[in-house]
Image (cartoon, rainbow, N blue to C red; front, side, top):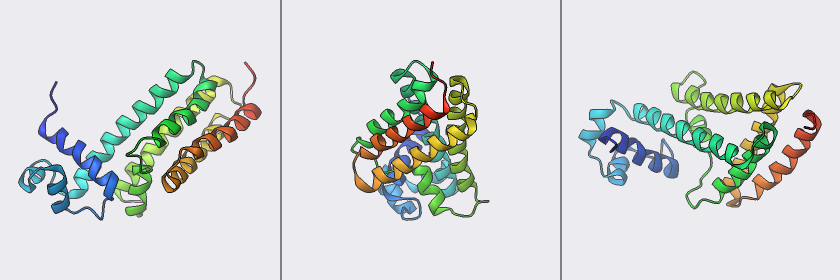
Length: 189
């Protein structure tokens, strides 16, 4: 099924915001970079923030789908999938367009904790955390939430360092630490 104009606009805007930032990207830049007229943009979105919200929704859906699917493809067991997250991250970090986490960027640009875009960014992290906790629970962790928080901390740190260093090495370093956490917190199968 062919995507509609709104979907095409959101897809193109995602690429622009990811590369240039939210506040630094004005409507004139979006018009130029996406090839969509201002009239068409405002037909679908009353404000730039509405467009950003749609962009974050799309990225959340696509990123979680990709990450969780990739973890399942790389490992059969919940324990293995927790560790496979870092292999998947290394693959992401090696992509030419990789520029860090758009949700971290959004929360940095919209720092008021009550702002809808800040809350949307934290919701994404919560959904990733929930998935990791579910895997940790299925793997037999005594404290699945704690292990999930620790692994998410490693994921976020690796992502930030990979964006700053333009290398996938932080994923490998985080994997080594994750293996130690998993060894101490999960029973051997």
